[in-house]
Length: 108
Image (cartoon, rainbow, N blue to C red; front, side):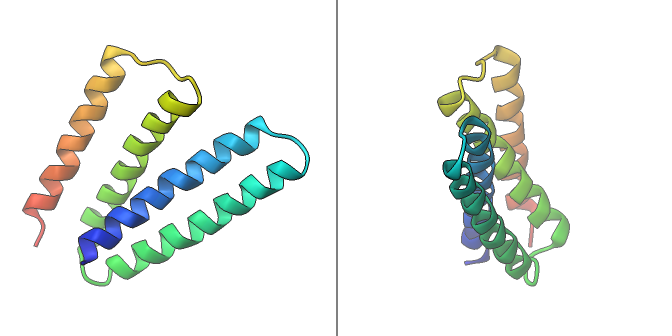
């Protein structure tokens, strides 16, 4: 169950990064809604991370959480913010995913 919560926490990290990107693109009151989404996502993500670290090792939890956030944020950047798709970018993203999976398998 803690691994599922960790996955959800990582996904909310992606959501708060997405909200930051959208806030940068908007003006007026719409910007405040995106910042509200950012703060709510941040609160949920951090709360779940805190809960998970009570059972899983902190180093593994944090590495997996940031890895999910990093991979998801790069994908969000490519899909929604027209960031470039380059071979080396995808290659290192793939190695990051393998590292996250590896940490999951060696954790207790």
